[in-house]
Every structure is written in C-alpha cells, then in structure tokens.
Length: 180
Length: 196
Image (cartoon, rainbow over all chains, first blue to last red; front, side, top):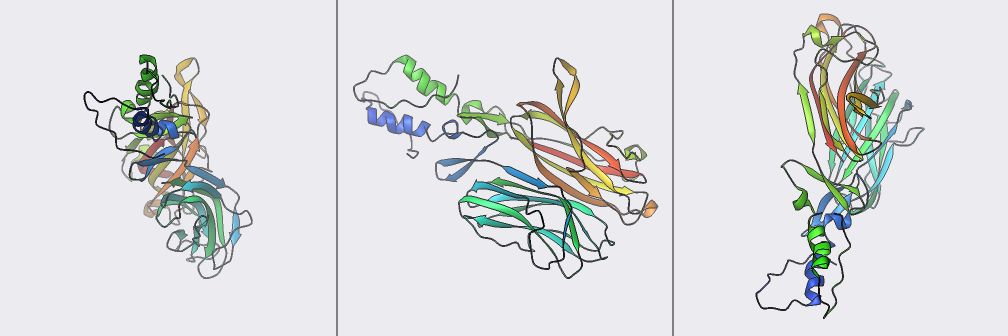
C-alpha cells in the first residue's frame, strides 16, 4: 500500500468500495498511528508522502580501559555499540572521559558503522584530547550528523586510538544514535 | 477513543454511521493534526497504534565567573544557590538530555563534576518529589583544570545522553554539582530535555 492523494468528492457521484479502500483504508494505514509499534519511537519522512517510525538507542560501558594503538581499535570491552534501523542519515552522539599518560599527547574516541553500511572510524568524527597534563582527564561529548548511510539495520560501535604513541585511557563511554 | 484497523470496504455493503465514526472519525482523531496543540512539539510513539505530542523543554542560568553564590566545595552532589537549571515535561519512555556548563576550580587538578537528577511527584504527595535517577558520575560533565587559584582555567563543554524512565509521567530534570577538591565555580549552565 502507498499514500494516494485524496480524491475530491463530487455531488451526485456514487462512491465505490474500491475508492473507499484506496482513499480511506489505504491512506489511514499510511499514518503514524497505523505505523506506531515501539514506545519512545519518533516519526520521520522517508520520501514523498511516506513516513516511518525510528527508535533512538543508547549504550554505555563504564569500565576504564586503555589502548596504545595508533589505528582505531576496540578496547578489551568492545563498544559501546547500538543497532537500529536507519534511513540514509542519523545523529550520532559520543561521550567519554579521556586521558593520556604523556603530557600534550592526543587520544581519540570515534565510531565505525557496520551492517547495511560499512564506514570505518575516522579522525574527522571523534572526541579528542590534546595539550593536557599527563593523566589529566577531560569528559566530553559531541554530536555528528551521519549522511552516507545505506537504509536498513546499522550498527554503530565506538573505536579508540592514540595519535602518536603512549597510552590513552577511556572511561564512561557512551553512544546515542537517533536514526532519521 | 483508540485506533481501529481500517475496515476493508466491500461493494454493495451499506455503510453505517457507527462504522464511519469508528473507522474514519475516531481514526482521524488519533492522527498528528488532531492532536497538535501548539508549535515546537514533536510526535512520538507511546504504544502500538498510539502517538502523543511531546514538549521539548530547556532552562538556562547565566551567572558570572566570580559569583561566590555559585561555588561549592562539596564532595557529594549538591545544589548551588540558583537551584538547577531544571526543566519539567511529560515523558513516555525516555528523554534526550543535553547539558553545557562553564567551570573553574581554586585547586590545580581538582575535578569539577556536573550531573543531573530525575524526579517525579511522590505518589500521594505531589508537594514532595521522588528521585527516579540520582545524579551520578557515570552521567556527568567532568572538568579537570590543570591550573587553579585565581588564574584557574575556565573550561566549557557539553554532555548529551539518552535516559529511560520507569513509567509514563511528568518528570523534572535538574543539574547537580560536586568537586573532588578545592572550590568549583559553575556558570553559563544549560539544560535541555527532548522527551520521547
């Protein structure tokens, strides 16, 4: 079924069952109440005259863990990670407490996408510390607008690295995704 | 009224007023335009075939960087002289919380920590509140200025999270503050809540 632009009723015309099914039944079935299934869901447009329910998701790993990798990797506890059905875009929010064991060295937390879409973690979309004293921590968050998703079920997983050596520490790691 | 799966119309069947009221009037009244009451709201799912208008809210306290009233030396989460910022709205399932604060501390390498508490009217006693989520370091902004004293670094940053509620209802979200040492100052405090 799809939305059909509602008919303009004319005086003296007899409405048929087929017309009522097309303009009333089928159109009602394209509205938000007909599509609502999951509490906390939101509605987004997916094209001309089409809407879909999307469900915001979040996950957190509180454990403090470390890496000395200069490529984006998982920590001992992988993630956090969330899976949700998206269109071609989503809002991705990252949060973490980050420190480095060497003064003025960089440590970064980003995310990768898998499932319907494959996107590697990139230093263009990260939380980052730099210029801090050794082992000083900054806890921060940032929001990224992801626009190159393949519609469908996508998994977003946080990834971590240091820029040029030493050891970065990451704790209270959280990811929130609002699929659009 | 509730949503009813629309009837499939059959040729030569006489439609009754009851059917039209059930399948057309009542269903139209369950849709967003029928429920929309004021601008700036969003629509969310509240259950199968159910949607609801929800109201995003926010609060802001500016203060100044040297206002003694907005300082604390407490190691436990506490209020400042201006309690909050805080915001109250109806939440069905969860809410997107966003905070931003500017902060400094009198002691080098002390932590300034900002979290939020979620409460609702106590059952049978609406003058008092029941805490649903305590302020916690696991959901917080953390500042660790390397300098302290009168030249203390001034840092501004933000935090966003998605938090669930145990049941649909009206909830209040309120910022809370603590330090690990020294005296922390907190100003330009933002709090916004998007309820789902």
